[in-house]
Image (cartoon, rainbow, N blue to C red):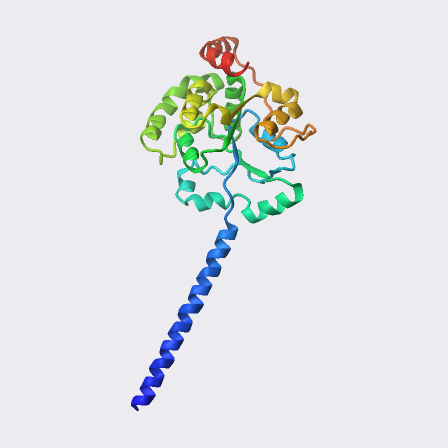
Length: 289
C-alpha cells in the first residue's frame, strides 16, 4: 500500500512538472506572437494644422515607396485619454511590425518609414507625450491662412451637426465656449476637452503660441513647416522637400486629388475679416511667408 502511494505521488509530480513545462511553452508562444503583432513606433508625425490639407499631404507622401501607407492616418492616441489608457502597446499595434518593415526593406533596399497624421498641434499636453515616446521623431506642420482655416473648421462642424449658429456668432462665442475647458485641460491632461477641441476656430490659428510649446521639447531641425498655398500650387515640389527632410531617396510624385476636402460658398463679412486679420497679423506674417 505504501509503495502504491509512493508511485502515485511520483506520477502526480511528473504530471505537475509536465503541466508546468507545457504552460511555460504556451506562455512563451503567446508572448512571441504578441511581440510579432506589435508594431514599431512612427518615424514622423504630421501634427497639423487641422483643416489645412493634412489628409491630402499624407496621401501624397505615401506615394513614395519608402513610406508605408496606413488606411487610418489618424490614431488619436496622444490627444485622446481613453486611447492612452490602453497603453503604448495599443498604439504600437496600429503600425507595421519590425518583421513587415524588414520585408519592405528587402524590396526597396533601405529602411521604410511610417507616420501618424493626427492633427494634434493645438493640444497643449501632446508635445511632451510625443517626446517621451519618440524623442527623435520628425515633425511636419502644414499651415494655412488662419481665417480660411477657421471658416473651413466651422463648416466641418456644421456638416457634422456640431454647430447651429452663424460663423460670426461662433467667433463671438468662442472664448465662452472653450476657456473653462482649456483651463481644465491644463490642470489635468486626462481631461477630454471636447468643447475646446471642437470650437477653437480662432485659437487654432495662433500658430506662434502652439509652436512654442512644441519647441520646448523638439529641436527646430526636427520640424518642417509647409505653406498650404504652396502645397496646393505644387504638390510634387513640396513633397520632394519633405522627402529630403525625412532623409528618403529622391522620388517624383504626380499630383493627386484632394482628400477630405469640404465645399462651401459662404463668404466672411468684410468687417469680420478685417477684425480677424488684425488678430492674426503676426501669425500670417511669420508662418505664411
